[in-house]
Length: 457
Ligand code: BES
Ligand code: MN
Ligand code: MN
Image 1 (tube, rainbow, N blue to C red):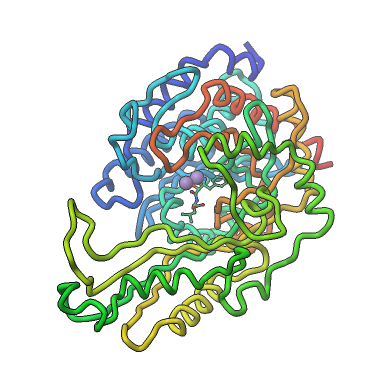
Image 2 (image 1 turned 180 degrees about the vertical axis):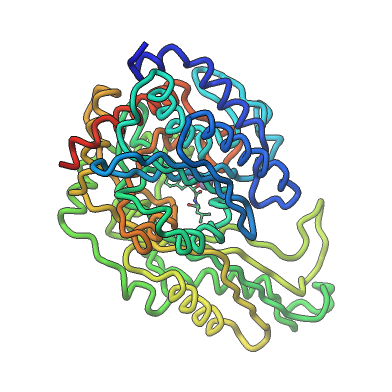
């Protein structure tokens, strides 16, 4: 047999078995007790790459989780594609809300249910299998290819950016190929050409030196939890506009063309609301839901705590309160600057009856891919051949901060060719990935590699 597409068709069960093996490994990067599973997942991928007869396969240690690298670059006259993906996953909790065990992949109604099925083990595995379809069917791999698979994406890639900076030559390429985003809808392939950036903050508000009786002290001593809520309430106005001075200074406004392109996408607000069981959407005045969720900045409390949360009622005035607050950013906002502006503003809103502490977690820049880049055109053609329908180009609201770093350090564009869909429930209980899209993803990837040389000329 000499046709990669036929090889894919004939090895579907094997591909699924192998993906299941990877999905069974709880490689949760936020959980320090899972270090061994992280290594196991990295080792699994190393073995996968070794089976492809690449010219180099190497596990790189970092101060955190290892980086898996592989390459096959025999051609002087063909483009080099760097495939990026992440083998770490989010925690599975709350476990009781899963209908099947998160690390025992289960097929139901044509979907693979497991943590990481879509984000990002299932999606990134498609490219390994696509390369396998050339090697094992006796066809030359059509382009130069490199793999860069990390284990810290879900914790902000703290060691990947320094790695890219110190391995610039090794990672030299013409483009990055990433499958870690969503298609516009079921059976509606899309290429994501923009991602939001991120600035993630934690705040603490401290009042009296201990929890107090709310009858004895209430009304006379400041309640840090009240203060926290008051400050949070002031972070946005009634029109959903973020009130941090300077926050919008570097925001590149949406052009008429941006807005028309977004409005032309087949977005159905009613089914959007229905899928979330909400009666109304909410956001910055003057923008559509799609714009709000993809190309305008946002600010959200991710978690808030303090005081009594147990059964029944305890009359208590808490001594401390805290919250995790994230801001999604758009070009050209700088995450460090935004974190500074947030800190200054938050501190300025605090009354002198409390002390506040504002700290910064990870962050990253937004990115927008040049729509004229030839790699996107090859990606679109591959999608169209396999999905037999037109491809849409859309921006998405999630963040893959390393995309901006690839551009800054390596000077290349990224092609975000997602095979997941928004309802895959990534980061949520019952994450899933369509079996059919797993296979179509492998086929699309293989076609992309075949088509790419023609587009680069
Ligand atoms: N794959 C997601 C990002 C994503 C999801 C992009 C959906 C587009 C559509 C990625 O694994 C992720 O979860 N990123 C984090 C950021 C990171 C710095 C922790 C995010 O967006 O919250
Ligand atoms: Mn991901
Ligand atoms: Mn994720």
